[in-house]
Image (cartoon, rainbow, N blue to C red; front, side, top):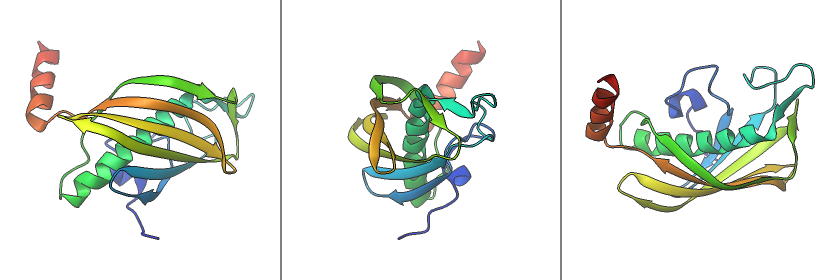
Length: 154
């Protein structure tokens, strides 16, 4: 098993918005990450000791971002800024993730073209799939990102 960089090195995020804990396996088209549900998550409800299951979409999206960041690092580049354009067919067998649960997040690239990509992803708890979806993402070129920044300031 390879030792991968800390998740904060793979994601272009700052705490507290880094929601996943670690990357366990990264291949050419796949990634396996983990998160332990805890009170440090900004979506944690201290009354119920849970996180809503819809946050699973972001767990999966951040896993995809970590995949992208890792491959950028392999090219001696910084982890790129990417955009979650949407998710399709999010399904969850549960309503909440409970404190202390260790979730395994898997994502696989299905297609990629011109900065756009589609990943299928799912979350497992104790080796049972509990949530899944398809993610549509976009990583603009540095030039396109600069153009987007300029337009947003106008």
